[in-house]
Amino acid sequence: MKTPPRPVFNRRMPSGFTLIELLIVIAIIALLAALTVGGFSYAQVASSRNRTIAAHAAIKSGLEKYKDQFGEYPEATSKQGDFTGKSYEIGGALMLYQAISGNGSDMIKGIKEAAASKDPATMSTDDLKAIAANAMNSALPKQLIMKTNDGYMLVDGFGHPFQYTKGDAAGVTTPTSVNPTFDLWSFGNSDVITSVTLDIKQDAVKTAPWIKNW
Image (cartoon, rainbow, N blue to C red; front, top):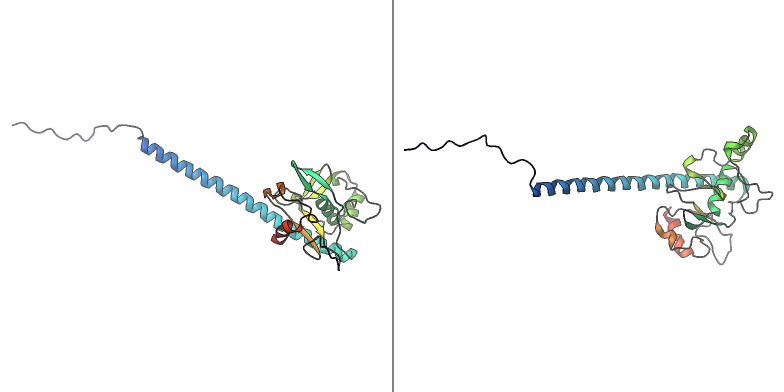
């Protein structure tokens, strides 16, 4: 009687992944990549939104100081401009920089002998002292200030010009603002700028929700 063969335990298994194992690995990698990209994008938007909220607070504080000093809130001269390939109302952003920083006044409506904003890097010490003395907020974060062909302007955390409208005077029958003091808002990273008229005087109904959001 023959002895049955002993089982072989050291037989080499086939090397490499099966197709199913390979697909599972690819699916896991794709899922992790999607989660990483999604988390990064969310963090970027959240950071930009937080910068916008902080900027809004800094500008609002400067506007209140401006009113305390001059008796009224500033009013921007109307100016439309091309910004990042889209047509923006940029007069408010240009005016806000001048009114709060004290550097220039040609974009502030009603100011006589207006002077255009100058580049602080080319100013003399005396000039820098002068604008610091006139500044409503001399500690504006550099991220808020953007130099353009039209001059310096204040931008939100998404790099878009802030929108501003002075409040209507008492007794106005056709309002052009939402708030009686001033309207200060940002469109953020929304594509609404491609379809909504930015001038609140033309379409306050569509613009009002954005103002109230901030």
